[in-house]
Length: 210
Image 1 (cartoon, rainbow, N blue to C red):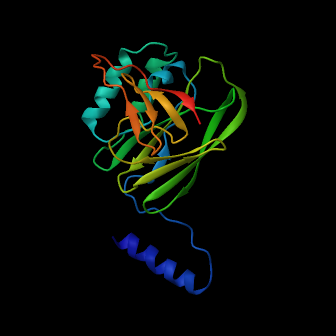
Image 2 (image 1 turned 45 degrees about the horizontal axis):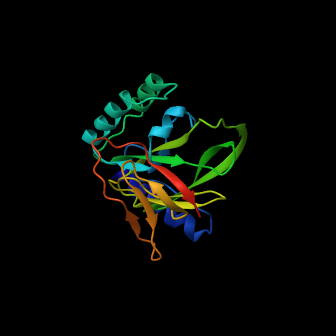
């Protein structure tokens, strides 16, 4: 508490002197948004979808599901590295952003801005070639105080609510397979989906982009 008061006093003094004050995060335990150091490309990411994991129980179920999935190149290393992130679900969530680019180039991600309740991540193409079977995803620890994270690239902007979620379908995706049923967007933007029963869900994929 004393540390926060000192920072506030210094900010007021510097503001009176017209000196720019750097943004300071008072989120205890770390930054409000931080990227987890994992490879951006792995065939196994084709099993993943954009989602936010908010509880330890949901997180353990996520890791258990990965144990049964195919196509992974570095499954064991992935599990070990994500465990080292030490996500504290009392105050943080795990955000998984499954990225699909329009070119055969791998992408990189950079945190652009972090405000009180919103953040923006810039997605940029790199010079590294991407094989047809490779998939991309980015992983973040997000303070529960953050309400939305916006992922921005040249192709599209996707805003992810920092709350427990299923699949997040980009607005530019007008037809998709949700893992069980096929869906399309109506003229009003609302999804229209088939209603077949599935014992086991398969990976989400966008079938047609606008």
